[in-house]
Length: 333
Image (cartoon, rainbow, N blue to C red; front, side):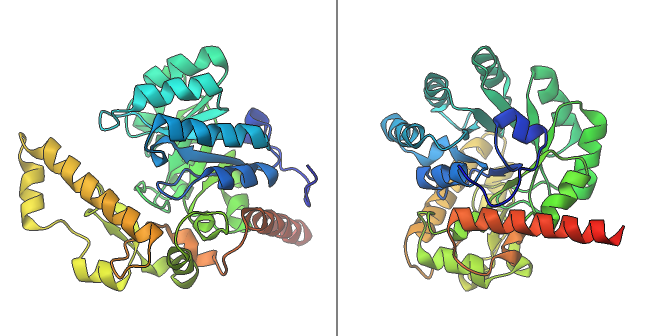
């Protein structure tokens, strides 16, 4: 497929056979097959959470649709801790369909890596520090997804300019930066820090292909980085959301009962599960319908989103800005 701009070659583009070093991040309730197909056409790789599909049949239908379009490599995000009771089934389906890569989150990727290696499926692992990064590297991960403090959803604690060099110094496998990239100059910055690419999510929520409500998309356009707050009300783990009037009303911290339950050793597991279930239902309701109870997940990179646009246009703008920044820098030398 013809692209407007020349390729940007990095370890990520070589690994996946894509034009530009960008993964459209897997977003709970947001990512879908249309977005992945368009990502492939635009020269990047899309990734979808397996949990976005309620049944294996629905998951398979989506993979069939993506495979049939055959526009480029794509990945699946798997939650690999005990909370995901469908993990074995989801992994088996990914293996059968020979997805190009899997991104693992929230647990040990050991089983996923062992299963994927013989089939040549790449495994990239979410990490927030060098301790866990070293662990997944020793298990055979192909790359690290460095989740920094600029990420949407469950963000890390370290900024990209600290986390990327730290992981590069500690590990030998490629580092993909996740969080805070919303314009081309920021893509250039993280590549210069030593990352081989960026995992970008929030700007794609405001894409024409995203299945969420027009209110959610418009919120991505209207709100800014200063409007992003951290809440523990959704999953018990800190998560970034837009500070809408409803979020301000309900607050961002767990109430006294939730805090007590989360500290009780016997009840902690069940309390977390109930918090997670209620939080996900709240997100789902807000994502797909016009409601005053708007709890919209997003990261600070919404700062650079000025309109609802097709996936392809979002990618082209990022790459155009990247080359403009490169040109400016070359002219300064």
